[in-house]
Length: 361
Image (tube, rainbow, N blue to C red):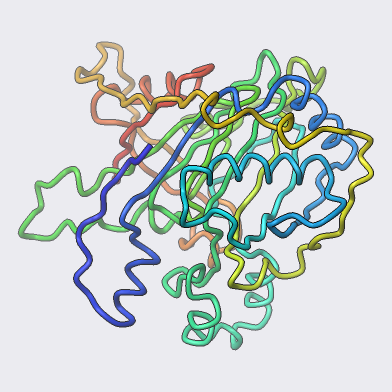
């Protein structure tokens, strides 16, 4: 599902390459239900629970001895690519990790983590021209990081009381981006749309797949309305699993013509998972996936009981360079129509994917 059409690109040379990287012609976010069957979903959950938070990567096309997670992710990507001859069969690297606990995840974009840490420790290595040349399709000299081509969340098992949506900010890669002026000049001071920040809320649903641009800022607030709370009382509950579990596989795709993410174990061939399945059983055919519509918040009236405080405080992950902003939070305003109530409703949805427009202060 294409969410945004960027303006025409007229620049040439290095400026063209820069714009193609940071302002792609289409910003795509897609959500599908029914991607994997229940048997595979539970087999993946069992394997992920044993593996814990291990962070690994594998090459595509696959080699011998891949574990059930790697074989399933390859099958899923093969189905997606079946409709795209430009990517079918091309070499790629897939970075992945798993998480079973429902935890608060601050807003961030996925990056080449080890490379970023190396640059934090030795800033003199951060030479933009060299990095742009070496990582021509993944490096942004504006942000100073390598970003994957696409990010994904595969939801395996979601507890009955979990309100844990993945919140994606399309076209934003840092907290600083959320607060940066969007071409609002003195000649166009009344163009309110330029100051809107698009937010897509994707509820966690077992068997669902979320795919988004690898540069996009994303988060999982817990409690779901954390961004509107002055403080949080008490500790979070994690058990029992069937009530509070949120088991997911998170995976990023990196282009094969560049190096894989630094220091992430590659092709370790951990295939002894005891789960024997053919590729056809690992995921459903793409024609059987059910694409989930993104529903726009169309509320046009301000509720009679609307709160006077309309602030939305988005917590940011990482150091100042990663956040792109000195503070730990980016302070925005709730949607103009519907206010905090419309945001709270979207964050508490059990299945519906919602698009809202937050505002800069």
